[in-house]
Length: 214
Ligand code: GAR
View (cartoon, helix red, strand yellow):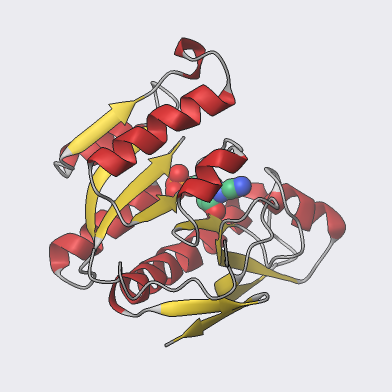
C-alpha cells in the first residue's frame, strides 16, 4: 500500500461525510449551518455518537441528518468490534470522508486503514504541542502565550497526522479554561468549515508530513 502517493481524484466528487462526535456538537452544528446556508457543499449523511446523552445527537436530529446513530460501546466485545460497526455504517452511507468533531475515543488501526487519508480531526491546540484529551488545560498549565487549533489527517499516531490547517489564538492573562476554550472554539468553527469545503472540492496528495493540494 503506497500511502505517500495515494490521492483522492477518485473520491473528491463524493461530498458525503460522516461526523463522529461525543459531546456538545458545536462544531457539528456549525458544519450543518454552513451546509444549510450554501457556504459549504459537503453533505452530512451520517452522524455517529458513542454517548447516549451527547448534545450532538439532538443537533443532528434537529438538522435532519439522514442517519443519526448512537452506538453504545458496551454492546461490543472490544474496540475493534465497535469500530467495525462504525465503519459498516459509513460504508453503507457511501461517505467519502470521516470528520471527527469532539470524538473522544481512540480509533483502532483497522478503522484508520479502512479510510486512508479520508479521516480528519480538529484538535484544540497548535499541534504538535499538547496532544491528547486535555489540550486546553495543558496549554494553560504550561503558560504558553499562544495556542490555537489544528485540523489534521488522522493516522495511527495519535494527534500526529499531516496538518491541513491551523489558527493561532492568544492566551490572555485573565483566561480560565472556559474562556480560552471558547475563544479556541470560535477559531475552530471557521477553520473546520473551510477545510471541509476544500476537502470535498479539491483533490490532494500527501508527501511525508505535507498535504499538497493538487
Ligand atoms: C473541540 O474543541 C475539539 O477541538 C475538542 O473537543 C471539542 C468538541 O467540541 N477535541 C478534542 O479535544 C479531541 N482530542 P464540540 O463537541 O462542541 O464540537
